[in-house]
Length: 147
Ligand SMILES: [Mg+2]
Image 1 (cartoon, rainbow, N blue to C red):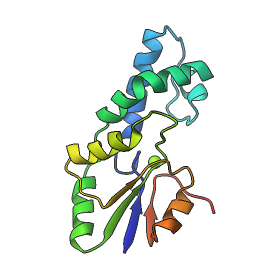
Image 2: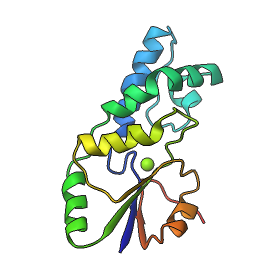
Image 3: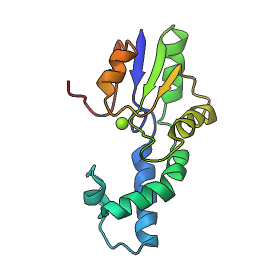
Image 4: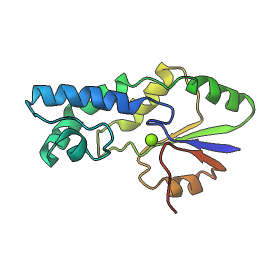
């Protein structure tokens, strides 16, 4: 089977790093805001303006993504699936619009943790389209996809 897997908060503990770096950013920029962990939007979670978001992405996002740790057992399960002959395709919405060089940042993360996958697809704003293009049989994500 062709198994598609999301990256952030599916096999990587990304939210943890986002809150860590978000706290750091707010402290450095003297932004007084009670961070809300249950919010997805940056303005509601961190109290950021559009300019803050741009500034954060430009200055912190690469370090943030490099600091992310894999979730427990993610490497082991992917290895088991590959040994059973399945093809693993990572489909992530991480985008070159957020930080340039996003493909290398993401690909290097897999190399750093020696997690072997077949394809890494970034810029996947439309994950359904990427699944269709990659003939994905099943897709694993921490958020549901609507068709
Ligand atoms: Mg995710």
